[in-house]
Each structure stands twice: as C-alpha cells, then as structure tokens.
Length: 317
Image 1 (tube, helix red, strand yellow):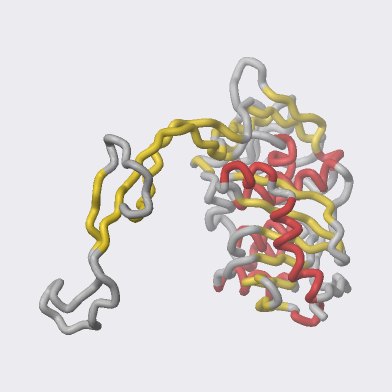
Image 2: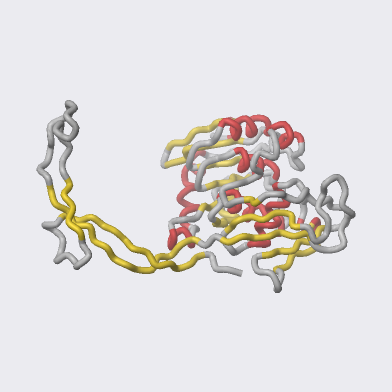
C-alpha cells in the first residue's frame, strides 16, 4: 500500500529583477521584459507606463512533495450470489479507480453506498487488502446483498458515476429520501465550513494537490474529513467512514467539498441521506436539477461572507 504523498525532483524557475538579484549562477539567463507599447505590432494602444527592465531567470533543483495517485482494484470476494442480470460474481473486478492511497476501506464502502448496493455496515461481511496483489481490495457482501454491475472501464480520480445514472434514476432509487429532512443551518455556520475543512487538510498542506470533503453537524461540529486527488473519492471516503461507524443515513448534516458541485457529488450526498451539500465553487446545471428533484439543499460559491443557494433555500436561515 502506497503513501499519501511522494517526493520527486523538480527544477524551479523564478524571475527576479536583475538589479535586485544577488550574483546570478552560471545557468541564470538574462531576459528583457519590455513594457507594452503601440510599437509592438503597429496597432494603436496605450502608451508605455514603465521603462524596459532586465530580469534574471533563476533555476534551482530540489525535491518537492506531491500528492500520490495509484490505482485501486476492487474485487468481489466470497461465495456470493450466482451471476444474474449482469451483476458481478465472486472473483470479478468491480471497479478500477485512481485514488490517493489511504482510507481504502472507507473508499470502497462509500463507493458501494454511491452505487446503491449497501446501506448498513452489516451489508459488508468483510474487506481485506490482497497480500499477493498491490493496490487490490477484496470485499465480501452479506448474503442477499446484490453486487453492482462490474465496470468495464477505468474510473479516474476526476470521475464519479460518469453519466451512468440520470436524474430520474437517482431520485427514484434513494434508500433514504432527504426531501423531508427538517434541518436548519445558520448561514454563518456554512460560511465557516470551508476554513474548518481546510484546517484539517494535512496532506494538502504539504502538496497543494488534494481535494477534501467533510461531513459536519448543523452546528458546524466536524464528524469526518477525508482527502484524495479525486473529489469523488474524497466524498466516498467520508460516506464510507460514516457507514462503517453506523452513522448512515446522516440527517441534519452538511457535506462540505473543496471544489465544484457536480451531478455525481449531489448523487453521492443524496444516496447517503445527507440533506445539504456546500461547495466553494460552482455547481453544474445537472447538479442543480438533481438536487431540486431530490429535495437536497445545494450551495455554491461559499466564500467568505457570501454564498449562492440553488435549491431548498428554506433550510438556510
């Protein structure tokens, strides 16, 4: 099993004013940076506002810390149900996803929730890391739990359900409808969630290259935070952790994510029984449509003291 981060050698380039730079190393290259003027291409333009200046491009070599990304094969184990109607059979690979190593059991459990396969921790008999195969988890489902269809393609770290479901299919298949959740959340609590999430992103602090998802109570109390190169994986890890703790469904909670709100993230929140999804960036049109159909509160551009509420604004007050 790999680490969440790795070290790689890089060449760092930095431009500094020649007059302010210390003695340039042998491989430094002088560059003349000219102010904009109409003489560049003969077209009319604003007059130059500064004299041309010389800069030096400095090169340094050092090691940098990067977010790890490795494949994870999820395989069905045990003597489960006989293959039927396209469902996976024991020994089949269920999915191959690119993820940041760590919290892999949470990831698998959350993915199974997102697929609509499991709803309680007891639906999963066990999970194990395969000793003879790197980056492989075998999952055994309880008797009577129907496995998902095996995926015929790689699920990348930027991919969720990849369009395999529609708004009607997701909304009509929810194990725990969220429309009737009576949660009310103070806008001040929501405004503080991105910073509270950021404070707990330990790997992001070292790499700057990971998404995060966090499940919070309506008063802002943190319950789970997970990181991954894929925003969908980060959500699956949070949902899986809650499932394994017996904390699903999750009424009265807010799922805060570090990026945009896509259709897939809305689907994952709704299938986990989470009534509110908050994102620091924009939602897509399909995400808004699905949130409205499910009765889920969707917020975007949650930054500082402002935010947009796209659906079920009655819960934010």
